[in-house]
Image (cartoon, rainbow, N blue to C red; front, side):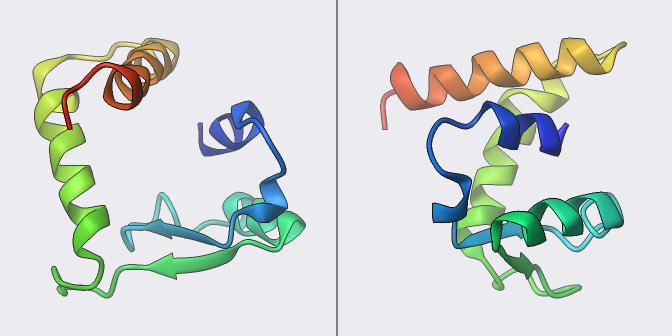
Length: 97
């Protein structure tokens, strides 16, 4: 899913300087490392047990979980992808900030 998200991004991926994630094993894998290395993108992992490591990212994850993930049940990965795409579009273009 992360690879597809990168593939859908418009513009030059090598302009991305940093990719931040939680330190969970789903983000610490060979495929993501290869993807980031191909485009020279730096890696930022939250430190285990440190909620202040990246406050903006943590707050964003909390909002996504509260407004999207916990409200729905996803039976297929494609359903999650479509819902997440719609959610990001809503956040970026319609939600009052």
